[in-house]
Length: 219
Image (cartoon, rainbow, N blue to C red; front, side, top):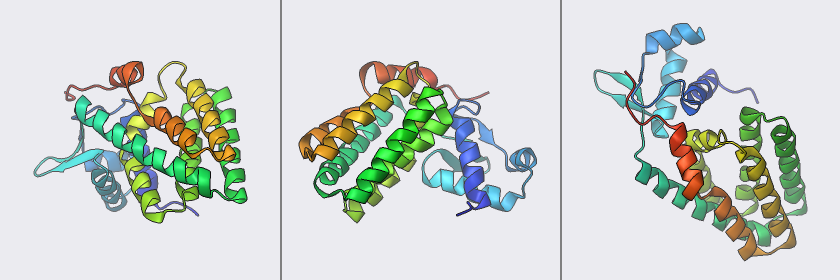
């Protein structure tokens, strides 16, 4: 299905934030953005509201939309929750995944392989998103899948940013492979552990993520 214009605008704005073009603290002037994207302010305002609901931008009185900034500790906490939600999805998927869903998971993994081989960060991110979505669905727990998807969308900017770290595409793909193996074999605890480790951002990975962020407000 064709995306709504507001959704396309949301992704375009999100991409500029994710890749540091628009840093934390930068004011997102509606008039200027409307000219930049060649659209009216109505779909643009809808896009900013969507981003605000995800915490990516803040809509402030008398100032409008501003790129949000998360404190490092808050970001760690959110990735910890995300890792546990996805571990639960993987555990249930290893027990409940259908033959068709396993085919879809392998297909998403193969798509990630193609994008990683060409170092296409943006295309890899979307393939990666589809990979995780199959696992959420394969848990056959609708409430859990909804919560995992909600948290995934809340962390989209930061999950995209970490793919910029040197060698991260290749390591992410390898980690996907180990998750697929565990789910396919029906090993619920191994699947949970591997997906938790894949999502959790700590140590060097968190340092790399912080290095990609600009924590000082934009001038």
